[in-house]
Length: 344
Ligand SMILES: [Zn+2]
Image (spheres, protein in one colour):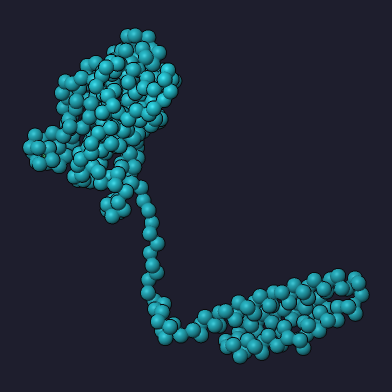
């Protein structure tokens, strides 16, 4: 009996495969699943079998019935679909499918990754810090005097806290990352801290309340890391970033957390130093600030005075993005306007 069930199954399946019309499918259904079909007769006759036989034949016959019913349904659908007259329904089956909108990274994020890749190749670690920062890390540990104008409400977003508790700010630069890193690491080391920073100021084409910076810190024993190290590293970085020959120029400046301090410029990558509207005909672009870490910052991080030497360097990633993509209004980057973002 079991063998017969197998045979019925094979016959039914090959017949189903061969048939091409709904009429033929109807005949097939009568023959293999109908009331007078052999399979149905077997199922009906189960009660007359011995208990032992029934245990074997019953499940096999039922399984075949389930399988054939399913196959019948599939064939029915397939025949119906192939019989549809697509053209009269106004459907062009050769038309290309509608493209699903696919997102991508923000241009500043893409550049952040590119910058991180270059620093990683140069042996730098990547560290992170909180955007809501203690006043201590954002200002005090970086040697900002208590009355420094940067602490002014006009420049800084202060977050209200209870009297006598730590005061918090939305970090105004990525430099607090220096102190946080030094607290948990011993020189020599090289590290970059990328991140968003916040300034309480009116926005215009070149000013924004939120933008992205990179902090770079390299520290070694006294005498190991010098301004020359910085200049070499900065040149190497920008040449890799822009993919062309770049010169770095240092100008004396002042920051509380470095001594000596300098602003640095690179040759204008648009005109290669000849002079254009972007560099205001000077041939140079202002990129950021740097300097040798002030010993008072080392002390704030818990290092003994005079034991180590290193440079700190900060530059605006947002500014680099504007340069690289020739974006004239910084506000576009944070606008959330997809028409703008989709161009990258
Ligand atoms: Zn230029």
